[in-house]
Each structure stands twice: as structure tokens, then as C-alpha cells.
Image 1 (cartoon, each protein chain N blue to C red):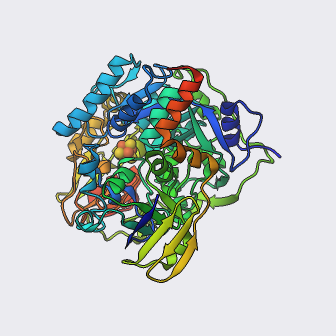
Image 2 (image 1 turned 180 degrees about the vertical axis):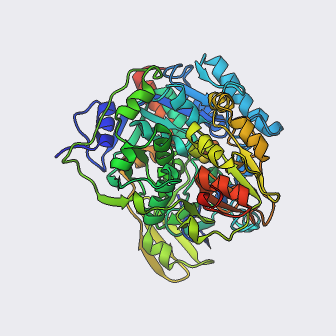
Image 3 (image 1 turned 90 degrees about the vertical axis):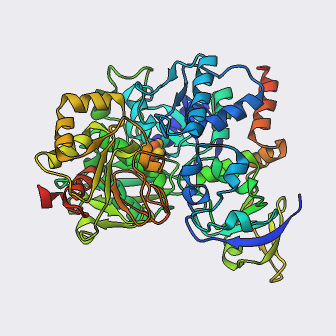
Length: 420
Length: 168
Ligand code: SF4
């Protein structure tokens, strides 16, 4: 019996020839990650263990990104804990405001994660790096503390579900729409504890940005990880970027999958997830009459170059509706610079949008665009839970950058071709 | 450990933003977090809950973010145990790691009602509904996770391992 890509990466890091779904295994980790919310708790726990150093100062990465630039005194205190810990332990990868980015945009871009890696992070969207063909998953702060000390963690080998996306991608449909559609089909616990393997011609034809978007939201289906087998697109992305050697794995033809889904993307439309669960997905044409107060383009799901370019394509020469605030948040300093070079900022500013320094900000209702009671936002983020972006009586609609940009122009949820 | 308390019942897919909204995550102080526990589902929960009370919920409890602040808030609010049909995976790990007892039982999640008086035998995985005079079985906890509990949480477990490895 063959193995899936997820099983192969886990086996390699457990020092074994093979692993079976359901087994509890100890694995070596290539990298451990924490942010300004989860790392302070992890550091407090780490200090209780009684060791005086981290397992490898080049493999513990701290990125203050959620509330930075610090929004208030309390968050400043949290960030300070990270800075002091990074200094004390000589961490090579601590990213300060001005050099940082949203962690899951930043780590792939900086070549800190690569194909075949095993990564854990105290952030649920750590699963993003599956887009590169890595096994990566989110854990809590105490797990991070243990991993920072040991360089190991324990995991249960997940069963895998295979998703095959075929057919030609319609215009304005992107990786975000595919993953929203998928979550709409299987539900927010449809892949609970499992690995989601994204395959098929539509994924093979997708850029790295699109793949990272898809893997990013695996957790929204309850999955442990999402993964795309590395290929030529991956090679071009990691060459000259990866800071460590990488390995390309692929599932064997006779690998075991618990379930298989085949989706024809040519029949898809841009998708929107209605409040208050990411599984409440509709084709955009069914929800066109919903007015909005705010649109957010950014986050670890859709804060990359492809996303900003797609938004710019629609915003060029158009104005944001008078009733709407459009907030655009490039995911990293590099993306910020690149967007500026390509002239996207000119387009955004002309349209009446605000451009923010990289931050999670409104995605988790932190700062930089909080909603009042009764306000509605269309966002390229990943969660639309009650109160996620502000007041418990506000609403978040999830979509890709094209729908978000078109909606900002129309003042209501809109199909991109309505403004095209 | 004897667990006995009154039930607070919640539905399916209770997410970590409901358990502890992100607007309060600029602190990790358990007492402060407890004051906002379950706030967006029931603004008065933190005031009404009594030490020892038990939360019962449907499927996928704790879905969403990895924030350990969620089980910390529940524990610090005085809740002695969470029983659900299923748990989201990061929440499941976190609860064990910080020592918040949790049990999976579809039967208990279905039959227990708000306000019931319930006793829990953690080792045996037996849930007794005193109000309705019923008992339910919970899914067995894997032996490895029992070791973590026996060590008093993951940090103690790791500290012991490091000692054996001679790292400290
Ligand atoms: S952008 Fe949003 S989902 Fe991504 S890491 Fe930040 S808060 Fe979490």
C-alpha cells in the first residue's frame, strides 16, 4: 500500500519508513512559529520547563503581526515579551515592524518554509505552507513552548481526503473561490482531524499565491493540514529563495484516501460565505443585493501580489462607492514595495481606498477597521464568526479579492463582471 | 478528581471568537480572560457561571483560532469540564495541555439539557446525569494523552523528558 504526501513527510520526520493514519508519533520539526498573541503564553510556559535555551535559535520564528504597530499599551506589552525573548535567545528570525509581514505571507516569501518541511506554529493558519508541499499545522501556545525546548512534537497521523479540481477556471474565479466552494460542500468540520490534499489540473495551473490561499483555509474545514504536491510552479517559487534544503514528495498512485471529491471548476462562480460560518457559501450571483459599509482586501488568505493585482484590475479608473470604506493591507513589506513599484498604490489611492502597513488588523477584529453594530463588511479574510471583525452585531462576508473590489465600487455585494 | 456541576448548554461549531473574542487578546491574564468567557454567545455567562459548572455543546467545539486563551478562559471562569459531541483539533490539544478536562460523547451532548446536574468520572469516562438519572459513556482518551494528564500537563511532561535526556 502506498503513502500520501502527508504520510511521507510525517514518516521522514519520525525517522521511519512508513506511518499509518491514527498512529501517535513523535516528529522532529523544521521550524516553530509564534505571534504576538500566542507567543507570550508560550514564552511563559517555556520558562517553566527549566531549560536555558531554545532547541535551535534559527528555527524558532517570532512574528508580531496581529496588533502591530501596537494598537494600545497592553498589546505593546505583549510585543515587548517577544522582542526581549528574541534578544535573550539570539533568535535570527524575529521580525520587527517595518521589516515584517503577516506571518503566513512572510515565511514563504522569506524562504523560511519549503517543500517537505514539517512546521508547527501557534496560529491556526500555519496550515498555509501546505501550498508549498510542506506539512504544517497549527497548535496552541503550550505545544509551541514544548517544541521550542525539544525541537519535536507529537502528532496523530491524519487520514487524507483527496480533492480533484478539473476544468478551465472561469474569469474572476481564484483559489479563494475554490476553497470556499469546497468548505461549502463539506462543512466546517468536514475534514476534522484530516489532511486535505488539493490536486487536479486546476490546481496544477494555479500560481503559488493561489495555492497558499487554498491551503490557508484547510483549517476552516477542521483539517489538520492542507497540501499541494510540489511541481514546477513550486520549484520556480522556492529556487533562490529557500533558506534550507527542501524535498519534493508526492502521493503514491495507490495511496489510501478516506474520501475523494471531484469538482468541475468551469461551472464555478466567484463565491461568498455569508455570516456567521465559512460553510455558508453561495455563488455571488445569488447574494447581489446585500449593501456593505466596508471592504477589506488583505490577510494571510489574500494579502499577496496576485490578490492586489486582481483588485487593481477592477479598481483601475473607478471610484469606491460613497458609502463604503475600502481598506487594503499588503501582506508583507516586500509585497507593499512591489505593489508600489507596479503602480497599484496609485490605482488604489485614486479609487479612494486606504492602504495600511502590513498587519492582521481587522481580520481578527484587532484594529485598523473595526465594525460598529449593524455594519457589514466584505472581506478577503478567512473567518466570519460572530464578532470576528468588531461588534457582535456586525457581519462579515468572505470572498476573493475580485468580489471584494467589485463590491467596494458598487456599494453592495457584486459580481466582478458588473463593474468590468 | 470529583467533577460535579450544573450544565450550561451551547450549540454546534462554538468558535474560539465566541469563547474569548479577539478584542480581549491583548492580555493573557487568566482572570481577565475569564471575565469575557463566552461573551458573544451569552454576555452574562461569566457572571452566572459557578465554580464546578460544566459546559455541554454539539459538534466541533472550539473551532477557529489556535488561541490557548480559549480553554484558559473557560478554566479560569470556574468551569470544571467540557463535554461535546466532537472538538476541533487544536482546542482538543490545548485543553489537555493546560489541564482543562474535556470529554467527547455524542449521547451526553444530545441528552443533557441546560440546568441539569451532572457528575463526571474522568478516569472511567462515565458521565452521570443526576437530574435525569441517566449515564453516558465518553470516548476513551488515548494512553499517551493520559500520560500528559498524569504528569500534570504538557510542560511537566516535557520537563521530565528533558531531565532524562540530560538537557537541564
Ligand atoms: S491575517 Fe487573520 S487569520 Fe491570518 S494570521 Fe492574521 S489574524 Fe490570523
